[in-house]
Image 1 (cartoon, rainbow, N blue to C red):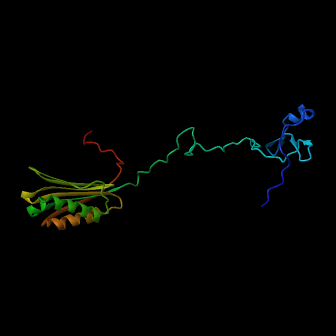
Image 2: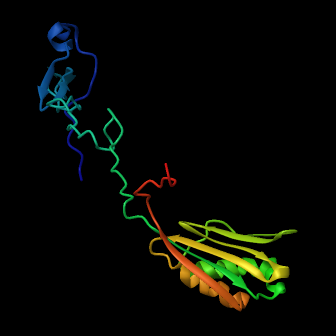
Image 3: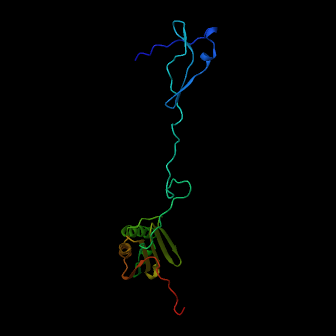
Length: 211
């Protein structure tokens, strides 16, 4: 592309051209912009105040306003967003537990084996562990527990007596009974007594008899 021909060259005007009209800057408005004129000398030696206009950014034609937001909008600065109430009426826990007997003592004294059993039972029950399993051996037996998201797997045993109490629970949708079956099979219990409960919100207060 060829550049446009120059309008003229800037130089000091003669004394007779130095008047307020030529040296004053005339501001014209056009579409929100401003143009400023300066006197220039053309190639033929004559002075003129004509130049190509250069648009300058101007103010917006009207005030910029942000649309109003409802009070529960997260971006509303006048107050916190309203949170919907959590409906707890349908929340339930599936809870199973068992008394196990006739268990070989060596299966209740192996910390690594019990930790693996907790993880296997949680997996069968559809529970996701929140922390590593914990197994503690002491003078009063063994305790093993696995905290899960929305549930747990726990065992308490007495190796010398071959006894173990197992407890599993999970939010509705979990299948703790399957986890309990894994524990019973892995420990090789010969005596089994199980129970199950569906836990949920307390709807009625329990008062002692005679109160």
